[in-house]
Image 1 (cartoon, rainbow over the protein chains, first blue to last red):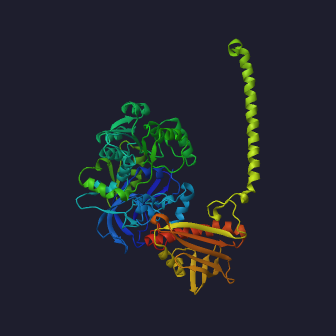
Image 2 (tube, rainbow over the protein chains, first blue to last red; image 1 turned 180 degrees about the horizontal axis):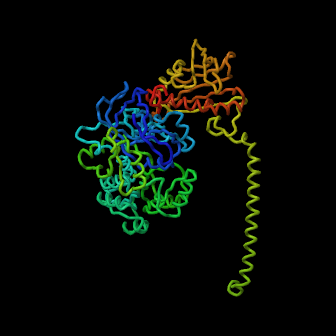
Length: 394
Length: 220
């Protein structure tokens, strides 16, 4: 089959690799019909996530048609399914508490050794990501093996097409959980850093959960325009002092909840960002955290800080004093996708949530490398790239 | 008063005060570091006289097990105690989750093992020395064993209905002493590392019915 493989920093290629097989009883194999490039794939593209190996198949946002099932799979051949990017066994303590992204059993035992010393606990597995999270072959390919296929995938009814439901795999539930973790109360003012896909979905989710005002922060005009269209007020950090603006726009109180949908590759020319980037580039495991520092300073006393943005290492100049003295609550975590799928699919079916506005480009799988490059360097125009295996390159 | 009447003089005096302050701080820092070093030295040998805490002995900062190396780990498995005990008690099941066990044959209380070592296969023979159904299984190497080892696995009800706490402890004399242990670790065949992974695979198998792998091909 053809698959997008990681070869090194800023080097991804579509290559021919062997087709996947059923290995475990609960496995299924999908023929991938749509797969997207995620903002967190760019962290791999930029080489800032450790534990990548040359030849790894990327892709954790995908959906497709079931073509093969193991004896314990509950899926049937021919069904269309969306697959969560988190791999979860459904049987361990965490899965039974619906903390699916904390699954004990999905990450192979030898791979668990990599994160246990780093984080104090071994991480669970993700598709198409670092070997810290299992090194499972991803879905930017013609076929993919889906472990625990009786727990993860959700069957899609015929009336909904790929573009409407593909983002159930990651960014929609991730934006949703970002808003859930912000514990939004009716009428709250919520500030969201980053108007990438997760930030935009967090804006949409926060409004659905009753926020009175959502303020979105970014620098790209096109992305800010999308946020505005969803009902947010916007701040362009290139032309406005963000902290002052947030105080003024919230009656001098500060946002009740803040959501960092930026993550470890925060940019913009601020002194802390410059230092963070230098350390990141010399491999000190440092995350760039300008957005998160700003969010913590902006948040009102006794407010909530939600972090759907991805961080992997350590952060300097952490405003711990502000957190403690202001009494902030902080929540992060990879997304418990399986927990939200049913409700979100229902809301899509009812027309309450539309995700198709996000897609700026549809490319054949063969053009995936071009998709990565543009998604990385032309962020204003290339808001979201969907790859279609099986379509011809032009 | 003094400040107002003799501002010049005050500044000079102030500066010499500052020098003295820095000197005092420096001396203080050196003395502090020396004192801390002495304290460390003096208390290191007194650990034995401290009242014991609640932690298992193998987590002590200075373990003392003679020539034995000790590998151990506890996992909580969301399955009933009796079921886990019975699966483990049938030693023929062990190679299902112990990747380094190449072959196993059981005759009554005696078990013969062929285990992958860092350089060659090792042949072990153990005898079950304690068997408390649903609670604990202990074994010890016989004279015929290439490695002097003993171990036990115990099963306790976990709190709050979380299943069973499974604790495995293996003590062994490393074939070439401490150096041999480090070489084995290099080849990922060291018991602490192996034990940790095997217990995780045991948990996977018992909770999910399979052992997670990222391999896409049976041969890989």
